[in-house]
Length: 256
Image 1: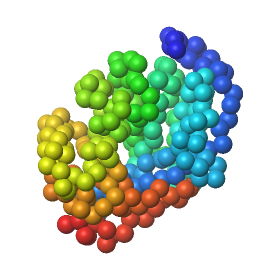
Image 2 (image 1 turned 90 degrees about the horizontal axis):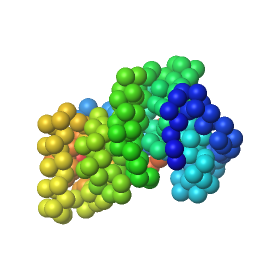
Image 3 (image 1 turned 135 degrees about the vertical axis):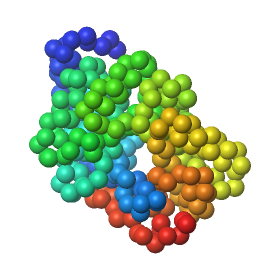
């Protein structure tokens, strides 16, 4: 795919697909166990009746990426505003679907303005679903997003395309450790050592760390002992379709 080099050309990309996707949004909390508060809600694309993300993505062709990425963002912002979100909203985005960041962000800015969503509550996650073909371009996107006050994150770190090379190239605000590193961490010294090393790197670079995919209390306790305070996973709450799940204080109490 050849990127347009002018804003007018980028706007023309909107005409490359007139397809409107039937989607809804599910929300999963990211918990700060140190403050006992919700750090953010991640917006997850779902079908109109709650069908899974793979079900939705199977309907998206290469020519639809721009339109799909834009629709997901706007849908998530409007859904979060409708539900009265009072914390950060984390949205996955497809970096290969972004041409000129200053132009491609306009629909997001309009949605935030129309709903009264403060820009500093928006967080964008680079997903591992597609290979980043131009790391310098993604760094340019992240720099542009920071200029608007958005936070950025590298999702699913440790699997797929979310490599150390990509981390160093794009330098996000947040590093999200994939569930592959989290699963059974309480019984695995290798996983513990690797997470400890990532956490030391994060402290030195001023990067936040979120551990995702936490399903059990032993996993949460082991991560807390390693210094991780931002956590996400079924242990705390499953994604809620068009609702903001509440995290029980009891679940957090058990970790310490």
